[in-house]
Length: 463
Image (cartoon, rainbow, N blue to C red; front, side):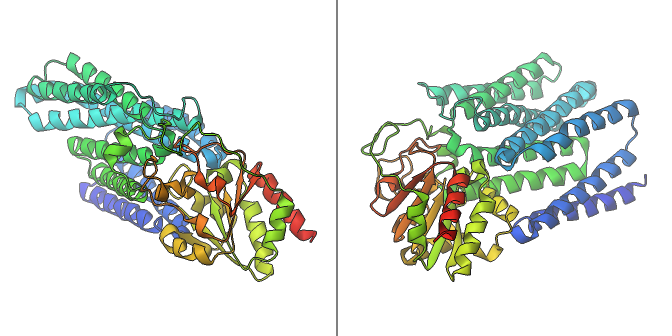
């Protein structure tokens, strides 16, 4: 294929990728973002296949078939509650592919690298391999924690930070050695080993509450690794696509860490979620709360004029978004003003609640981000919290010894009445007891969110 035509097709693909990110910045245009990304990727893949000579077509066809056989059921069958896990594994396999291609490129070209003393190419390959391998194991560990295969609590032990950074330091030091001595190919295996081990140790010591941010950080690592490989392969679409992936993952991680009022260092090495005992806010503290029935909540809602729903991971687990919409429709038919409070890190991935509510066709203009909805809580009659734990905990504002202190939360406790639907009074991913359970204006309703809301709807219809 004409090289100029290849560049033009790559440029068109890049434009689609950029449009994809632009469209995905808003819920109402997110579908266009998906289609733009798919179109850009199809153009990029086809152009690459036509631009280079393929020596083993049968292997390529086999790889495509295997990918389609594995990927199609995952795309169609994975529930929305498991999308974070699927995302983590996509990062894992993508980064592993990049790392293996980088290793193959080094082994294939090591003779020319040795002859030409090409330090730059070797350094870039080493950097992308370190990022790729540590992202693979880190993403795999994130998947295991989110899936419940491993405990959500951080694995804490004395000197863990030194041990983790030592593995990364060794991988970097070996990379420097390989740059200076490219004939020592055995060092390549050692670099991979220590990078893989660092990814395991890094994420193993991070609590389940921080997994969404960790996934965003690992997404950034995977993108940077791909961009670095693009420089080595002189593949411009890989450079741009990797840069877009890396930068968007980094920006997203920054937004999420800002939403929690925490630094990357604290997220990666703070060990939040280990259940450290504080004064009045602990994992083991036992206090009694009074439970209410759906009929009691129906009575309260009958006189409410302003109602806000605060969804969390409990909504995703019970798949209660459609029932929430049905309840909202009943309230609106009675003249009630209904809004939805969206915390940036509610659920297990960015935008998790937006996606769930979009499935139920909740109007976009009823979704209020935390900064917009917090000033409105004092004038709200009833807030219905559906499984949103850490992001509604008043301890983040009132208890300085709490691990959550300083994290911006939905200030639902300022409403006249808080209806909290939850299976139990167990703590969230952070391992911190929720002070909201024990406030005098909170009405706890225990049970599966979908079943509770269905009973609540029946009670309201019978009034």
